[in-house]
Image (tube, rainbow, N blue to C red; front, side, top):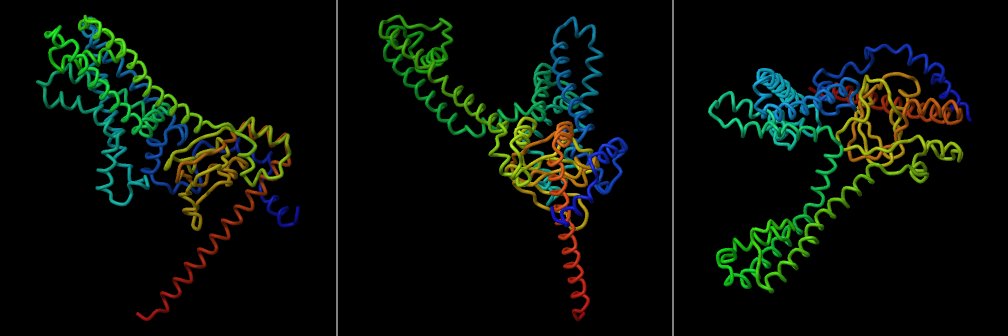
Length: 441
């Protein structure tokens, strides 16, 4: 190791100093990142949930419990004896729930300019945000209460049905539901094709049955709409038995129709299931040595160290505009970028808007030194990350001191590059200021 590397490495606290720093770190997030606004903090809690820290996790769990409790309350309120005994409780619970959901809805609209996608035009972008699917679901969840308040003669049974739409709010906090919605969006053309095929087969079978049984049973198969009802029931293999052919040709056609129904309805199920499994595997891909070889930090690493890393690293897929680390929060893991781009926000001068790409390391300084993250890092594009949890990092760095030295050296070189970039930005700004002062007024 040359002198420059040794000097850079010696400037980073040792592992023992890091552990002391973790124990000394106060709960209050006092640090250079306090410049982030209150609205930005609220936006992270609402949109990032557990990724924004403990408060976001508590908020997310609270809302999920409240949504499920609302569905249970609506169901119990429909039972007469429960409604008679606990009707007042259900009424107050509904009022409190609607108030909480309304505040949540208003806060999301208020904080939306913190999202880069909706930050250019405050009014127009807020209107565009309100039309997003999740926001429409949030509006439908609270609308029945206000309809009942201002339109007292509305049918309460219909309003109770719409109150059950609050269950759809869980999709915001459920990765599985989000993945399923994404799969349906990706495979929409194939699903639309199977729907067209189903309609064509339904019409053909109905027309054939009309020709075969129309004269024999005019009351049942005397028109095409009645035959289409029979075709749909037979294709779905439900077979209520209220409409059945009596001729040999009609029964033969009914058998063929039922067999075709099995294949037709298996098509969309197979398409969705296959795409869902593919998406899950794409998100939770297995960590291999080829992935680690893409990270310069692990170049030349021993086989023993690589095997330990492959056992401890966890893979993640991160959607665009989702925070990976939040400034001011304590580190929970160190991240290695496999693919995609990330953007830094909330850093000091000269570090604003840095772009991180494949091979870069996220949160190395915070994880090594036991300090809070000095900036917020968002996914700029869809990203694949490898996460090394703090407790696994502790074990690995104690077991392999050489790995610790490599991470420390890499962090020092990166910080040196940031400081150089900051100095260049300051110089360019100062040059521009001098030139503007020398220009004739």
